[in-house]
Image (cartoon, rainbow, N blue to C red; front, side):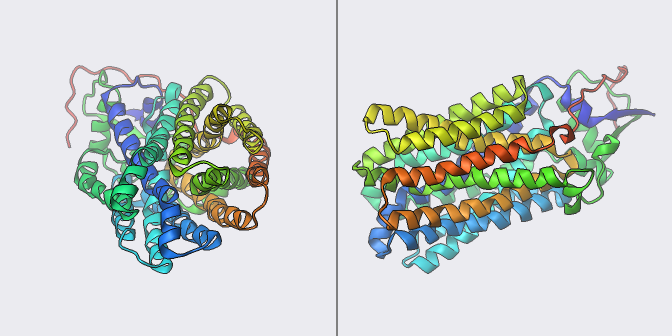
Length: 452
């Protein structure tokens, strides 16, 4: 019986319509995810005014979703490796859509915070699953680019908020931007029908017929006789994807450093996503002008994500990630001292590319680091633990804003996290990263007739 290593087959495949389908769903889901997260930042000034809360309380309200994201990333990521990725993606989309829309009905800070926490479970939950899904099926030569391209959708969601938020809020109130977020529940049946299951899950459950179908989609030129066995490399076979495997085979210290890198990266991202509008208003800009800075920030993030993915495929992705953290720290520091408006737009663009862009590249790196059978778990726990940085960020920056410190000190406080992140990535043992080998094509049979 001919054995075909499906991981090596995927690594060596050429990009085709099957990969485009996964890319489409990954981008779309993260566009919606990014909208749901960024919507609070755009609406925060109006919410503070209507509910009569100060900056410190508003920081806790903004961080409630991030607290939910911490649990969602770990819970959904681990479950996805055990029971299936398409199902957990559908659950995640349903969760963040329904509870974000419900937050528009809140009239007090406590109710709003509870609903945002519940929405956060879904917002955080889909991130590791999408990362693992794109990473598993992507050809190795373009893997980092495809994963970061998926996460560029996250920035598109932020751009949508910046483009529509001002008009919707001024015309219909801050609640309107939350109600719009309920529409993605309509996509759930299509996700379940068209998103492929993880090859590792199918192999573990002995579903060889479905593996054969996926193998033919990965490589349409593959011809099967029906006498093949689809297998995983021995290093990829992990029973039930236990969390303890994140620390096995010498991965323990590197896993901790990945968590630190995520913590600092998410600290920078969520400091800005929650408070950039307010900080720009403190600098003397109107709401419309402040949202323009948010728009530029997210465009920069998209360029940084795609450019970082390209660099990660061409060069050592670890070195590229370190450079991005350092550029993020430097540009954030400069942001507090830049006075010319046109130059500030340039700096904000670089900040977006080197903060949110950095975090998206970090997802690609973590997705590559862990074996496919624990990829959702590994990225999920890194994202979940890293959410502590996201939770602390709005509260800490809110406290700094309440102290009425000079503007540059607020940005410098965010920049320090970039330096810590750079050191953490330097300490990761890159030699432990997952199998990037390419398959030798199996002998070609004359017919394709696998019995399912």
